[in-house]
Image 1: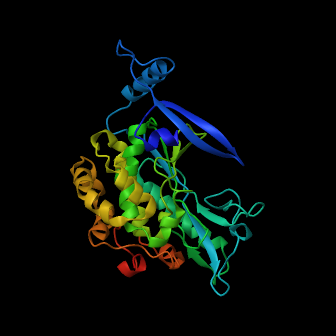
Image 2 (image 1 turned 90 degrees about the vertical axis):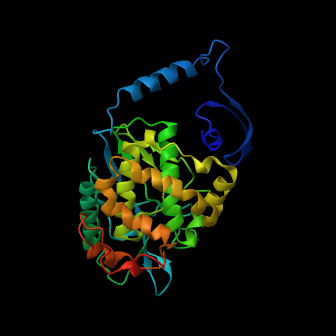
Length: 336
């Protein structure tokens, strides 16, 4: 699927060669084309018809949309430069919990996660996120530990800011809208160190079906780098998913911009960003979310980037409420 998606295809056949060691090479791709009569061959025809029926059943603006998340962070003992396993303080489940780490950390659950209860409105979800952060602060009793977030705050430790959606039909245009209108602007804000997360993690269009019937969008780095960035990312994601059919631009389909995203080259993508921003601002729901999204867009315009070396704990514990667009201790808390 990833090979098809990277070529801008929604369906097709991919030929793989097993290389050993659970490695595979793509040796051929065949796009699925309509038959002479104008219809797709089976089984693609039936799948396409089923998808069309699901999309037709959705209401404008997707009022049934539900969002959740599980952004990650690390616990660092700065004196030694070592990661302290989150499992020492946090349970496996709960709103503040622990998760597995990169290869080589089997049997240990070093990564901390915040798992706020899903909500239909971004502000309500952000209130749950603030509550989860306070719970993590209560459980992590060692005040000398530093909390780190972002894409790769420490070498070899890739972190994600996974967003969960239900009440919307998963389809390629939705994923491409999230890539271009959400992952791209966050890419423009990320610390230069975050580029090392790709391509193993954070690939475009990365998703995982979820037991609740929705899906998890896995491309983003951990937006816990600051409450302002988290507020902007969550509200922007909700806006995009609610109106993705009105967001048709796909600059990341261009080979040069696609390559720049993976290499960390911001300059060409800065040039591609203004038309996407203009379309976002023109959406019917933008005005209601502007107070949370605008700080993000201003930071992009000022070519700022977040700092993954900073301790985020204080900014979340003393954070302003979800209704606020302000950063508690000033812009320097979030950006370099």
